Image: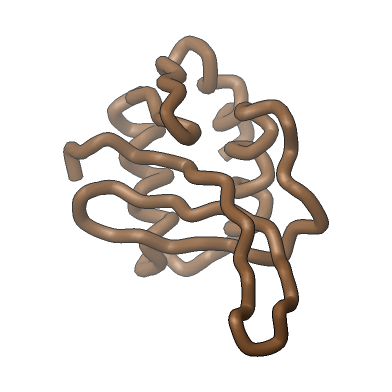
Length: 98
């Protein structure tokens, strides 16, 4: 896995029931996953990353997010939140306890 990992905050709209949910798509060039259980989307991009980490805490190693998370930690790479790039030095504190 060597492609850019992106966290894309999203509003999920059910076209049949018109229910709205909030969450985040997380993807790279190979896999994608999402969470859609948020009450709202944090204004701060680093809070978006933190919320995703919390949502996927304890997922099985075969889950796509686990692979992306391991890649971020092992390579100390940065990520995008939307179109904004955050280098490892800006996000590493989010991964201290993992």
